[in-house]
Image (cartoon, helix red, strand yellow):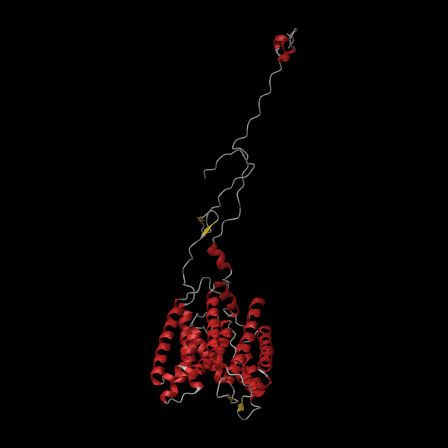
Length: 404
């Protein structure tokens, strides 16, 4: 191998070089998941279709009623979009962690009723109490899901039933008592919602975050526990989705006409999950796009404003059912074309001194301080003693005697 003899001792590093590509796949949980990077081209394609549909519907609404896209009507439309957007974010957050929260619709209606009855006590008091109750309820739901390892949809459906019992205590519509008008800040509210949705989508494309958020996604036996980290992430997602649903209910209640009708709220759940799936979030968890939620919310909101212009009587159940059906089609596309490309080995990356390592390479020898020479140096011959030379002896040596 061309070792250079420096006269010093050498040692060979017994640890082989490991390529960076292999190290990245170590954290993909290869016994339960698919190692490799998810593809995002399918999300770009789907979001382009959503953008085209939103542009077409916006143009149709402009032709039918130009006033709907300017002035007070536009601000009301933006507040409706933010309310639906918060519900879609709540649904998407729980879906990304593979723990769908079906209680978000009833929670939104219950929060709207609470704000309608307690709004005269001040915005901070009425909204703060609703958020605290929603957080506690979300925490109880999360503990049931991660501690008992039960399906989130079943546990949240049981929680939704309990919230519906609270809603059914009112038999008549409730007039909103508060004086908060979100239309005065409609533009800021929509910009904030869009920023949160897009930033969340961007962070979700980062490989480590996508793995972390989707760790609860079942890939073997769904009843097996996925570890404490997956439990913590899922619990935070369930609490966050419940709080977002409560904020959405308050915002929708404050938007004129200012009357809240007691309903089960399950139609809002269907619509929110349908919009989230329509935006490109996978029903299996983990995978999702960047701009899909904003585009899907805009598409559904503009359609709900355009339908009355054509004298169409479309219920929230129908819109949510169609969005859910199309969203399931999007899920199939995302899972088919968004997973890591099969049979592709990632290109090895430079390691150490810039050379390409493949994992099978022979470790390169390194210099050390002490290295034994190839052949041992023979000892120097001892010098002859001159006084033992036969020339200096007087008598005959014993071995020269005649009797020998």
